Image (tube, rainbow, N blue to C red; front, top):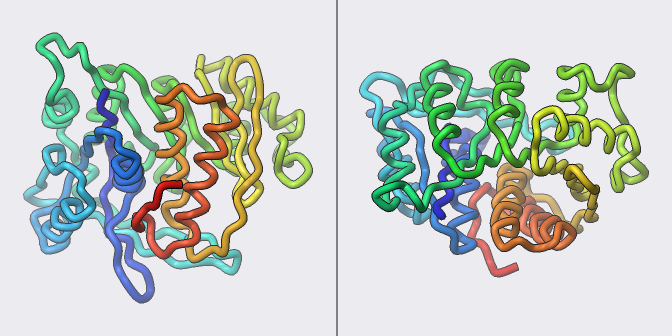
Length: 305
């Protein structure tokens, strides 16, 4: 089964360089590096950055069949700066070509290579940001209905990622990934954390009882198969309908954290496909996420880890 990543393609403009990025691109790259069949659905402008994006996607070994061209809107850009804590701060330029993904073209690209009756199918990987415009939102909704399985990375980017978009996405998802702050925000939005911010357990892992209960409540409300929570250097944990598992983080000298969560997500998806036990899935995902955090850029050459 093919894994289709849909959403934004952007040039991340750093103080000293520019790098092609966007969570869907990063996840697709890391899935391909793990040997899985991938498709990318996005849209670039008819401009110099758009042509450079197509060249870079080809260099990364990603298929171009699902990359649409927009005659009017520009290729996406994100200006990236880093705070005192080393975490990236994003200024996402709007509007952009990826706001205008065409639903019919998207479905055709996602289903390319299926059998006559679509028996092969595809798994969809999507986030919240690319749904900020109703045009791309419609395309993603159509893909979610057609997909056999749906992986959703909440990946909040205010002010574009609203409560409405997140709730609608949770209703479409099978497996959801959030970070610790996003879990707290979900609780507030959904009325599941009336006491406000929910603190992590000692060292971040294992989760405290309130955090675990919050995750369980979200799973029950949206009938998710799993909710995966990343806690930075502390590691990650997952809640299913039945149980919670946790795995400590990997030590790393951080170069920059851009793309590390996407590498984590790709490794998680690949390990889930192999039906590995959850502790092993989390350990593998932590390892690849930490490796990328130790490298400059979101799509470094990936060794076998």
